[in-house]
Image (spheres, rainbow, N blue to C red):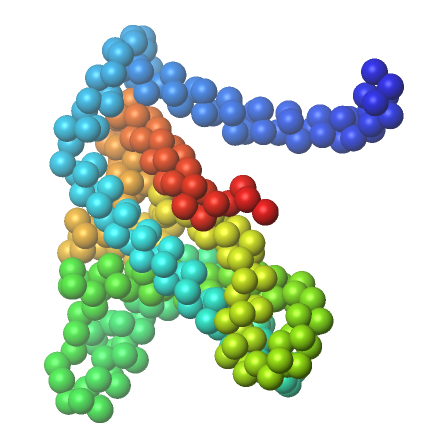
Length: 291
């Protein structure tokens, strides 16, 4: 009791946070779970129908196509979105000029601040078959016919992965640099005394000391795999929809466009389930809870 009174101010400070999450996170979650078991209509009765909505989703080929697209695109973003900023951070850490390092961080971080509407517009403009900069360069340099990147299935997924990696590369790079900044300089001094090369310092000092930061970034990126929506919604078109539509787009299609709230709620809980399973696997593989 004495401990509670001593820390009472902290409990009071936490109260608004608890109320916020209860109203805007957990209540919608419980309401969505209830909806997934109903024949939900905007008006009238909403009878409970058991697992019928889940059965509809599981027997819908579009759901499985969307799941495969999510794993393909999300997996690509996870892998390249982890490796690219790590290499970039290690490279920038070797730069001696502080002004160049700060300028590079600023330039790389700017795309993260832009919305997907802006990023999507930039890529659609650059990849346009008529006046896009990429096709103009291909014609001038290689003399080949224009490629309709945004309408060919071969390029569609690669463009989605590449644009997502480019957008968030600066943000993840700064996180890695923050982790590198926390490494004790004495470790590098000891390595130099042992005549370690720059690469050996990176391999035996920087990377091992950066492991906890790498685990956190990998886990955070894993949580976002099944939440991809804005990018696909902005950049998709009918020609490539079947190859890029992900689970969140499938949920949007069912719930908003077709007004089938029950199946949409069921699909959303599959997203929650897949996210929990994948996150648990990543935590186990990376030994996230071990110090």
